Image (cartoon, rainbow, N blue to C red):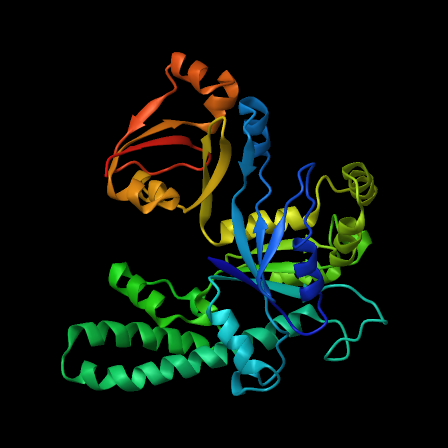
Length: 364
């Protein structure tokens, strides 16, 4: 699961990506590695794992991760191949969610590609290019499905009805994510279309240091514009974040943050938001060898969660032994949580909750 950082050139995308690559968020050092030149695997800051480490005192700790992709800046005409248009659109299609960076600061030394700062226009520029590309995809698909629908093919008629609704929205400059699939058949179809504007989006307003806490007039404009989009807006001073990552000690970083009126780096907030945007959550395994955070999709069953550790765990699943994170911390250990009756045995139908501390029994 990958979240792609998009935006116009010179809005702070690559600087943000580099900040995430060095996200020394809390006392722990959150490492980063590069899979390809523009893909980073970033640890998800989670104070719960620090607490489990404190209680269990394991030999090692492994955190949950999220993949972040730095995608080349998009320009007008990208849907027709302008600039790095085709590469950009190919990269974004491979991502599961979009982190859209908008320039919300004035600085005469950093040239804006369109001459002046206007996050509303910038957002619309990118939206239009993505919508045009999706419109092209939808119309090609409609050409194929129309013939089958005319013959009375029920599946084709269902697909045509959904495509027609999406096409109408795109023609009105609305993204595909504004269309709600009706029933399971449409949900499956929507997924199969792989439309760019159907992906969930998180807006990052890149502001000056003085606006990092409360935002500014540009942020207010963005919030007003996206209020009906069911999308989160995060305020981030990317320049200040870059300065924070240059500081060596945790104490220095905390002093810098306090001077800005922040309790933690915005990079940490963003990483957690991206994780949530990808509809992911965490469960833990906790033993003296290792305390580890495992990433699963929200709504995953116990066998599916076991399969993240090893496919054999899912194939031969017998049961899951579960203690909630809150109970584990309250009683201080697995043994004491068991004594208090907070140890549950769950079967194949159990839906894993965020923060569950789990053991799996399996037989292969």
